[in-house]
Amino acid sequence: MNISEIHYPRSLQELMLLLEREMNVQIVAGGTTFGYIQTTRYLSFEPSIMYIGQIPELRSIHKTERMISFGAACTLSELEHVYPFEHGQARKLLHTIGTPAVRNIATIGGHLMYGKRFLSLWALLACFDAELEFRAFSKTSTKNIWYSADEMGMPTIESGRLLTRIRIPLQSIDHLFIQRIGGAVFPDGDGGYLVSVATIDRRTISNFKLVIAGPRAYRDYDAEQRIIAAPHPLPARIMQTVMRMYAESLRKTNFWNVELLLPLISQVLEALQRSTE
Ligand SMILES: Cc1cc2nc3c(=O)[nH]c(=O)nc-3n(C[C@H](O)[C@H](O)[C@H](O)COP(=O)(O)OP(=O)(O)OC[C@H]3O[C@@H](n4cnc5c(N)ncnc54)[C@H](O)[C@@H]3O)c2cc1C
Image (cartoon, rainbow, N blue to C red; front, side, top):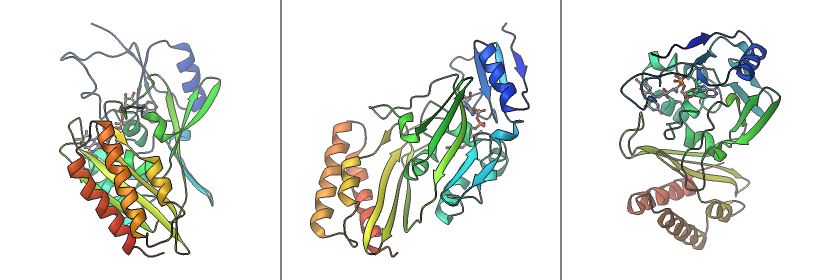
């Protein structure tokens, strides 16, 4: 039987020193996925377990004029009233995750670092251009959340890296579309979310994103670029071009059900046409 030592660091500095010293480490935040990430019937753990829920730096929320930043160990409940979850639809999505008791323990860091698939908030945070800050002993790196998907759209989580903060630029939301697709999202299954966000500025679409995430993640940058800077409402020819682009890129992935998703994307664009600044 393996015996693991559990560490309870009380500061980021203490955690960094431990991560530098220990070789094989399992980071635990809320611990709600523990049973699900085991690959065998028998529980097995790394020799060192780091519980990160008592580190104040990882539990703080900062807001500036341009950006909100939350620590990776903030629970999902703690995020309920902050941007972007103060937005009714985003909060509704947050509330679909588990139960209040689960959300009081489950952290946003654990949600994003699950690794087996993309969980419920991933598509929304990708639409909001979230940036993930990772720390190692002597190095901090920041990546757009999109870089936690590989070129096939599969999750790529480097094990052993500590996610410290999630930063989201503040922007006005004129159009937010969230649609659940498929079956179960957790612990695995074919379910996911299609999320689209847009900003309209003086009758021009100044921002548009559409992300689908579940077992894989999908986004068509070229189609988004065709919409950004276009007049609002979108001219019919741009609508047609964009629908063609989405049809082609979805087919290319050889994964998503194009017949199911195209009507939803068309619904997104029609709802965008009706949006006001
Ligand atoms: C009953 C139940 C129902 C659920 N329903 C849903 C649902 O409907 N939709 C949905 O999307 N999710 C659902 N979940 C999953 C939930 O979102 C995740 O379990 C939760 O967010 C994970 O957070 P955690 O803090 O418990 O992570 P943990 O279990 O502690 O960690 C998860 C993984 O992330 C790693 N990790 C954690 N924090 C960090 C960090 N800061 N840096 C690096 N690695 C880290 C851990 O090492 C581990 O590999 C459900 C969970 C439960 C228990």
